[in-house]
Image 1 (cartoon, rainbow, N blue to C red):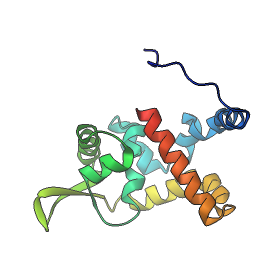
Image 2: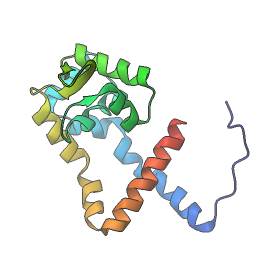
Image 3: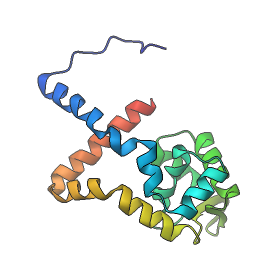
Length: 159
């Protein structure tokens, strides 16, 4: 379905930015990603029909405390039912664990299963190696701008 409005013409600087996007294609290519994924993680993903969309939940759980499904939805810029479906499939596969929030029994907390944590950490480190090196070259203000721009782009793409 076509977008409801006519897109504006990019500025010369914006043409340069848009022209960079196809150069990132190798980062997103399936075989490249597949080869970086540790075998136990790859096996559980494949045997349970889990996709990259499910995989997007997992790095969110590496950063710290368990998250609620609502927090996962907010971080991924998806609806609550979508986040719930993703977490449900990951839970059935044994990749994540769901527990009752002791502070609020109506909420469910989601955490990464200990079995898969080292495999996911290794995968994220390998997968993000180029991005992390690029981020190392940026000042804190440039990093903040990069994160803000990337977040805005994700929100726009997910519509």
